Image (cartoon, rainbow, N blue to C red; front, side):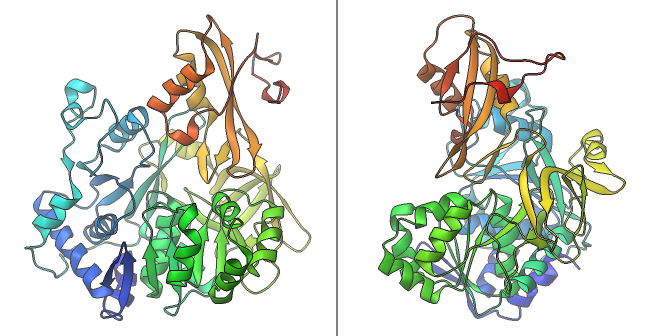
Length: 485
């Protein structure tokens, strides 16, 4: 069984029910089904076949949902790109995934104008750019019945790019089985049903919203309001207007929600059923403050791009502050020298065209997460950090090596080391230590980073040092760097 079969529980079984709200428009499940069927037919007319890749560089929209569903129905592999990425990051993904096309309605970063995504600009092949509004208009005249496609659950559904320790993103191949197993686990363990109302403000290019939000919505048949983005000043009004029962967020969002006045927070808590947090560690203090203000204990869980959801605090039972709870059904966990290793139907098929990296990521069939944890006597897991020096800022993963390599390309910089420092709202932010060849202002370096890197990767401070501390083997000892004052 593939994802389309599971989505038919709503596309066929709840065809006339309102499925989606977006910017004042509503759509039934039948309408969502028909829109994506037409688009799948258009993709087939344009030559897309099962196994082809389609890169998508879009903010949250109905069109992005249409495109994902059309890919699922046709067997095309959906490859979302973070809209905060700049040309350097996008170029790597476009070269690595070798998509048949790029769908975007945005002005592409400098260096990626349509005419520049071609062999003469350093790309291995020309990549056409398709505009979503044009796709929708062209598809409107096509039949609304689903095109024929025979797919099994092992077929790839998406490639999610996640930073690697070398600084270059690797594409995690997620199958129909991976997404299905994940969603069915969450529907059961979090008791999500057609009676729920899901407010989703996370970006669909991220596996949190795509893997959890979209799939739980479509399979359960609940009503979802999709936001173009989470806007802190409008949060209270949005909650009070839509009156959701279910909300997925990251710790940064929950910190912002603490600004909602107590009377409104209590009213929101009165109709909410479940708040879920993930993508970064949730501070125990935030959980306690939120419980006091909203009358709800946030449910914290643990997942990865490569595995979707691995563990969760229980829906019924103790939601332990600072803990990510217990392994989900079907997920086996092994702690080796403190590192979490995983097996289960949620674990990805491997890294796209990276056989060596895939082999290195597994040992005797166990996926090595790189996350360190402790297990309590009663089975709860608490994350202790990364074996590597991964920084998680506002739910986004940042590998320092990528920023360090860019900084060391600057003629004024001899060496660079980037570390994460605690920050209340985003959890962590990157700070750069630089050994300079010649004088340069930190703001100039920041401006260069902003031009080439996603905004969340730009160091919040640049600290000049005479040298980087190293051990006898020449490895930089980041723990010996002076912390910012």
